[in-house]
Amino acid sequence: MFQRYFTGVRWVLKNNMWLSGRQIIHLHLTYAAILGTVFRLWVFLRQLKCPVVFETYHAVGMKIKKSKRALSAWNLRLRDGVAFIALDAFWRDFINRYPELLCVHIPNGIDSPVDDLFQDNIEAFRVQTGLPETANRIIGTVGQFRADRSPQEIAKILITVLKQSQPNVHALMCGSGPELVHVAELIHKEGLQSRFTLPGLIKEPRVAMAAMSVYLTINVGEITGIAALEAALCGVPIVALQFDSCHECSDSSWIWSHVKSDEVSKRILSLLDAPEQLAAIARMQREYVVSNHLAEGMYRRYLAIYRCLLDGT
Image (cartoon, rainbow, N blue to C red; front, side):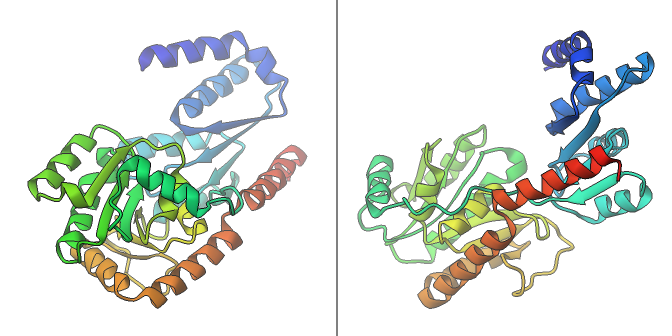
């Protein structure tokens, strides 16, 4: 990893004049953020003309060390502007402490709704992944099997639902990562291999989502991930395990969530027995995403911020 950063720093120093000729340098994620700071310090020392340096900060609500979050906050002070994909108490306080820094909230945007998820696609996916024909109600998720995303906790919720439901209910967790082997061990221990499918990486996540009856995700407060937004566009109702222990469970939230795994399992079980309620939730959540999280709206917000930065307003 250090070799990669070293190579990146060398590239920035070698191409600093070219970078200085850009109007805007837009940074994403840790690697770019560090290199962006190196560039900013370089042009300061050389007294070169510096373009606008702007960063989108993606880690709001993530489980990261306080020291890393503090480093991010220091780093962001060296920007001309910052876009947060979400806001929490820490970053709201940051914005208040640095009013001279142009900070905006621009939620993640995803592609417009797709209408080509024909039943044939879903059936082909079911065959390819080995889903049994008797599985007419599928609960599941799509994501990386990393420890910070608690895939074992997610699997335990799905296992609890399976143990308290009829054989036609099936669980599906798509994705891969270091935690996959541990999830497979949990399923084997419970003897649920025939009712729980782990297909690994998949090419078309939306087809997998469209095959589901309930999608399980992780929320931090009101913050959810890209995959959950895509599931909503597929018309799949979403339930979340809540990572923020201070967040109060509320039926008014666009995604119902709870910090206790048992409560999440109970919620899924109750919804599986209420198809009309499931359909109503799916419609509401899809409408919310269309109104608030499409890529076109995100694109317009970024263009407006670029103009403000270039105009110096």
